[in-house]
Length: 112
Length: 117
Image (cartoon, rainbow over the protein chains, first blue to last red):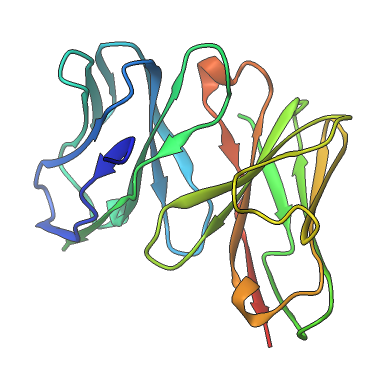
């Protein structure tokens, strides 16, 4: 079993839809959880950052972490064509190595 | 916000030659830099972690003599692909952490697309 599992999609939705992206993980030591957005041929851009469990909201984006289930989610409300990109979850342990462990990424297309 | 500049954005080189990729943190001091490789439709694969002034730590399976990493200052790290071959063609991305990465996550460069012909 990989440390971080993420459905690669692709996911195609109409404009205005609510998008749900998810990752599961196996390492209970993960404490920091991030979502990155990556446009084609570009570096990843940090969207959301969460420490431990809980929810975090930023505009149209909401990140949720459920450590008991080892499950994290990113919700995008009122999705726009400009949201079309690959979304990567990433996480790391507290203390120790600074290495991030990434999911495979989910390719999202929002159709006008 | 934190900005990481990576150059060149793309490069084509002949087989057997070496290519250097630069990664600079523009508005913060990067105590740690990470180098990744990404194949099409794949996630980021960590190649090595470098701390300023010390030798890089390479991930298992990554040839340290082929992928030379230098982190000589708190704002600059370089990756040199030596004696490049077509199988080294890939998208290389750097990431920098200021040590407050715990709070702010990690800032990525825009990536370098290397094509070896």
